[in-house]
Structures are given as C-alpha cells and as structure tokens.
Amino acid sequence: MHKLFLDANVLFAATCSKSGASFAIFELGRYGKVELFSSVYAVKEAKVNIEKKLGVDALPMFYELISNLKTLDSQDCEGPFSYEGLIASKDLPILESARRQRVDFLITLDKKDFKTRRLAEADLPFQIVLPGEYLISRREW
Image 1 (cartoon, rainbow, N blue to C red):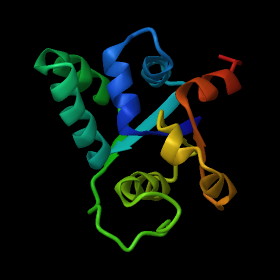
Image 2: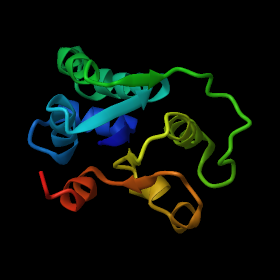
Image 3: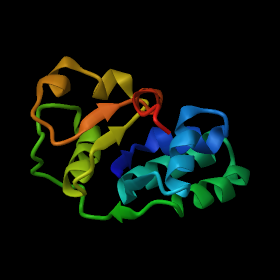
Image 4: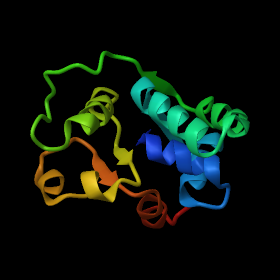
C-alpha cells in the first residue's frame, strides 16, 4: 500500500471540490487503498488559505478530510534541513516531513516549486507527483 504525503494545496483543492483529483486521493484513503500523511505545517497553511479564500463555512469539510490522515508530522520546521538548496525555504518543511514519514509519494499541485529539474535529479526517497499523475499511474483501481 502506498504512503502519500499531501501538500497544503492538495488539502485546499480537495476542500474546494469533490470532483477533482485531490478529492479522489482522499477517497482512496477512505477506502483503504492508500495511507495518507501530511504535516501540521501543511494543515495550518491550508486552513489559513481556506478561511481567507473560501470562508469559515468550508472548514467542516476540511476537518472531515484531514480526519482521514494517518499521521501529521509535528516536528519543528526549523533547519538545518537535508534538502537545503533544492527548493525555496518556505517549501523545505514539506520535503522534510515527507522524508521523516518515509512516504512513497509527495502529492502536490505546486508545479513551479516542486516539479523542477533540480528536484527530479535529486536522490529523494519518494516521488513528487501531481494528484492526477498519481491517479493515472495507478489505473489498476
């Protein structure tokens, strides 16, 4: 069973829409097809963006979704980080949390910062993919 780390933008997107790939990732978790992981850092970022862009009425859906996470990494987000120099400092806690939780995939919608040549060539212990990429690559479901 794959272990998936969910970035804040995936949490936000799943809260926005039940028809997208981000929500489908949560459905896989709900049905026991994958294990879902994230971090306190990512959850806080998603919550702030949900309140600002969607309003507090969207929070119950958000809380329902994150209740399906297996664990939330809560370690301090201060360096030094293993992946310093590979990505912007604001995104380092996401990479570090994925590493610490020994996931197979980091699922993100942030192509600009996470889908770079530098990260693709790095010796990461997990793959970085978009929600749709993950779903397409696992068609056996």
